[in-house]
Length: 105
Image (cartoon, rainbow, N blue to C red):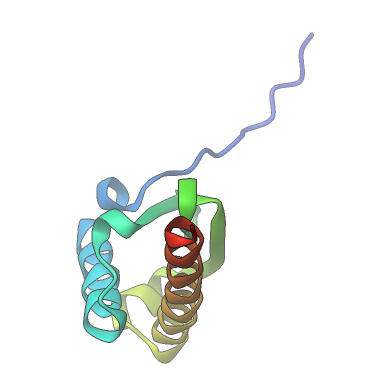
């Protein structure tokens, strides 16, 4: 008999939690002018929270991932805001580097 282990696949955060997706996109846009098409936001729903993955850069090759409990997400606590800020800083660096690579003669 085949042992079937439950594999959780990441789905779009826009589908799993649209309000959180809008919150993250608005924070990214406000702080670093990063738009929803500049990132790919994925999430895996667990029993106690969400594992959020933000992918960015050329072909979405770079990523930042963290787990947040539903309490942290609902309260929009400092941990969530710190994660968003770190991701925004890294994304901006990657976008600038990608731009200069593209513009290099």
